[in-house]
Length: 142
Image 1 (cartoon, helix red, strand yellow):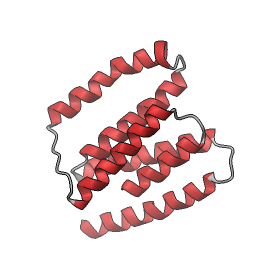
Image 2: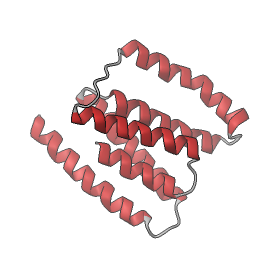
Image 3: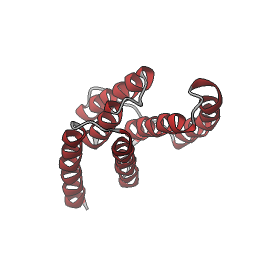
């Protein structure tokens, strides 16, 4: 799943519509998740904390639309990146991983709409590769 989110996010970042703080935060979240998968870091979040962080972002989204980026589309891209960051760090159940896959697909879809560069197809190919691997691993579990 890390590969799915990473390839979708890098394709989105390659479109030029992701600012530096968002890029740094999502990359740090992906590195944190990789450290969690390798067993170097152990973090567990309660459902209440995750829900309050997600609900708190609603106010931050409004602030982003009207003050920070002053563009609803850019604020929505920030929102998708925030939800991806939150879900990739806190995913534990099969349903969470399903949401992570959907969020990664949304990142890739947004990148397809925004990117006019040829190297988007490299990230698309990596996304398809990681999607096949994730679905094959998920099918092997159930």
